[in-house]
Structure formats: structure tokens, C-alpha cells
Amino acid sequence: MTINFDTLFARVGKFLYVAKRLDDSAAAELVTNLRAAEEELDTEQHDFQQAVLGTLETTLDQQLVAIGSMITQLVGGPIQQLIIETVHLDTPLVTKSLDAALAVLIEQMGDGAESVDASTITTSITYGENSSSSGTGDNWGNGFLFFCTKRGDGQVNQFILAETIRCEITAVSTGGTATWTLQGEPAVPLTKPLWPGGSGTNRSLTSSIASSGLVPNGGFEDSDDYATWLPENWVLSVGTLNTHVRQTTTEQQTVTVNGTPTAGWYTLKFLDRLGDTHTTVPLTYNASASAVQSALRSLPTLGSVTVTSTGTSPNLTHTVVFTGVTNPSQLQSTSGLTGGAPTITHATTVVGSAWAARGARCLQFVGDASTLTCIQVPVTLTAKTCYAFNLWAVVDVTPAAGVLTIDLVDGIGDEVVADDEGNNNTTTLALTGLTTSHQAATVAFHTPSTMPAKTYLRLRLTTALSTGSSLFVDECAMVQMTELYSGGLFAAGFSGTEDFRLADYCEVTVANNLGGELHSWLNRLLNLANKRILLPVGAPTGSLTDALIA
Image 1 (spheres, one colour):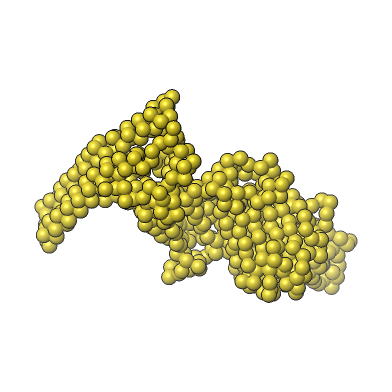
Image 2 (cartoon, rainbow, N blue to C red; image 1 turned 60 degrees about the vertical axis):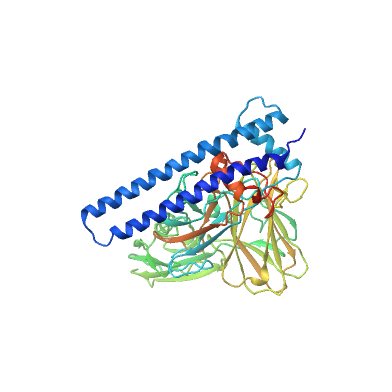
């Protein structure tokens, strides 16, 4: 047998009409009358008048709660029983529960291509002060928050609440990660008139960098032990190393002490990316490699540099490898050396990449107008989960042609992985829109119920990059997105080329037109969002429309 959906939802619609009338008329009348009374009392600030206002607010809230309870009893209970008994009559349930009945109902709706009307949900973000959603305003950091209205199975969450969510950086680290704290508007109970309110969410999430995400060597800092120019963990399937794609170099500089000093000291100075100068402790005239390394590592951002030395003390050449340092400045020195004819000279022997977003290295695609270069890395992901992926891209010369495609692929079949709704996990970046400033490319991935034996993240040129241009990709980071509340938005954060500082912030405006009124009322009465249950929805109109509420 098959459930007669037209009959069932027509009956449900009758009950929802009662709930809607109770909700709309009672709430509107009570609030209108109360506000009129408050205006009369609020002309003077006498204590007794304020006490009366407080009593009015309390009484209003009690009345609204009472109306909500009436809606639950008069409508919610009968609808729940109607659904259970209708389903049980068609498909006997082992346990006559609402969850079991809804599972059968949803399965049969899918098989019969039945659906309810859809709501439209959108988000927009404003960063810092006096800024637009496309900029970072007055924030110090140029990272961002990323929001997704879809669940892990690829379905749009219909019960996301319209509100403004305040997001602020409340903790930072020297490594580039930071903590966002997200605060939603106050919540209103589902069946209480004046619903919907906000989500009441109060969540923290990390603004991630590549090393804190799920992509192995997503910052391209480590090299393959057996293949020059290839980042560790990555596989090149199309193109030639160093011709079409390469891992950029790490900068090396030398500090050379000449003239055979016999005493004294010297310091090394480093100018960071913010323009601040940092100076080492004084080094002895014959300082060893370990002493120079220790002094440099004590300076901000230089914690991973390595130093080796050649020559005969005290005439030593110290080679500094700037591991993890983005586009370092030339070291300088102040000399207090004595004896002999001492000098200190500086040189750059290996030039690092000026295009790394973070760390010392990045991945370079070299354009030749024909090669569709492809590189990929294995990732370990969970089924039916929402992930956010981001990379930072920049070009040395804006190309006339070129498209980078980012996708999840079956590591064996090499096919793009689709979510349970049939949507491919893929996105494209038009390279013709890139400049010499870093730009983020971000996408939400939704994994299927049945995962491939091996899943790869793939970066490939699907339109060849123009000759004379190079694309630089860095900070490939993937993180599992955070559900802000049951049945709500999913969110993730990514740090940019400039670190966040405390009190950097943004505001997220969430809109929901509640176009799926039938679905929305069933959520209010049956608590579908908390159960993470969605009925099949149309786009935007289903076969079981809101007109049934009559």
C-alpha cells in the first residue's frame, strides 16, 4: 500500500489552520493592546508606573505561554497521532512512535516524488566598521567566516532562523589561528506566539590555517623525499614537475663575519611583515651556529629558522634557512666587534617566494596555454558531513585564460564525489579574475552516505593557464563545519594573510522567508529541527502546497 498524501496533508492542514488563527490573532491583539497601554503609562517615569509596566510585561508573557500550550494541546497532539495512525495503517510500525512514523512517511514521499513548499534562506556578512560583505572593514585580520545552509546530506536546512549573529575574535595565537565567539539573538519557544525569535546560539569556533585542517601538507611546506619540487603527500597526475608545477623555494640568507675580530659583539635585526623591527640579544664575536639560531628563534615569526655555519672561527658564514617565514626581509646587523678589521656582510643566496600566503612556501602552476596540470592529495572524511574548504590564490600576471577546478574525487574511479542529493562536490575559480593580491576560494563539501574507499582533494586546471602567467596556491585548509544550533546554519572560519587581533568582528544577517509555511508549522508542533528531520521539499513549490492550510 501507499499512503494517500493528499488526504493526510489536507487533514493536517485543517489543524494547522486552527493553530495559525490562534497564533496570529491572539498574539497580535495582545501585543497591540499592551503597547497602547504602555504608551499611556510611560509619559512620566514614576516608580509606580514602572512597576505597572513590569506587571504588564509579565502578564503578557504568561498569556503568550498559555496560548502556546493551547496550540500544542489542541493541534500538536492530534497531528502527531494522525500521522502515527495513518502510517501504521499503511505500514505497521513495530513501535508506534512519531520518529518511526516520520521515517516511513519521508521514505514514501521520496518514492512518490511528493514534497512540501520550500523556504528560501540567505546569509550576508559585514566585517568591521563601515564595511561591506566583500571587505574586511576596520578589522586587522583579513580572514573570514564561511556559512552553509545545507546539512551534511546536501539538503537545505529549512528551519534556519532569521536573525543577526554577532561574531567576535576573543582569543588569538602566535601561529595564526584565532577563536571566534558567535552570539545569536534571544530564542523564542516554538509554539509561543511572536515566534520566530533568534537561535540563542553562543558558540565558539576556530579560525583555521592549513596546518590545523584536514589537508595533509596543505601549506606546501614539506617536500617529498624522493621527488624534487613535489610537496609531500601530494600526487601529480598531469603535468611535469618544475615545468608545469613546482613547490616554491624557502629563502636562505647568509651572515658573514670577516676580518678576524678578537672580541666584541654584534646583533642581528629583522623587519617583520607589520613593519616592526626586532633585534637579537648580543652575539659574541665568534658565535656558533647554535647560538645564532637560538637568538633568531627568540624573535617573533622566526621560531622555526635553522642556521648552519662554514669557515674557520671567528671568520664564519652563517646560513639562515627561513623555514615557515613568509617573504622575509633581509637581515641587518649592528656591530660592536673589535680587533682585526671586522666586517659583517649580508646576502640572499636562495630567494623565497613572494607569493606565499602563510609560511615560507606555496604551490606554483606555470602557464603554457595547453597543459591541464592536476595535483591531488588523499583526505580522510566522514560520511554525511558538512566540510568547508578554502585556499588562497594569487597570480604574478593576470592571465587571459585559465580555470582552476577544486573537487573531491574517488581515489580509485577518479570520479567526482556527489552528496546524497546528487550534487557534485566541486567548484571553479576563474583565474582571469585574479590579481597580484591574494584571493580566497571557498566551497562547502557534503559527503555521501557511502564514501569511496579512498577520497582525494584534487586541484586541476580545466582551462589551461596562459603562457607568461603563474598561479600560486597556498593554505589549502579543510575543516568540519560547526552546526550552530539544531537544524541551523553550519559555520567555519579561516585565517588570511594577515592575522586577526582581539575584537576583530563581523555581523551575519540571516534571512528566511518562511515560504514553506506547512513545513514550518510542522516543525513548530513536532520539533522537527531538534530531531534533524526534514520532509522532502520542492524548489520552491512542492506537490503538497501551503494552500492546504485552510
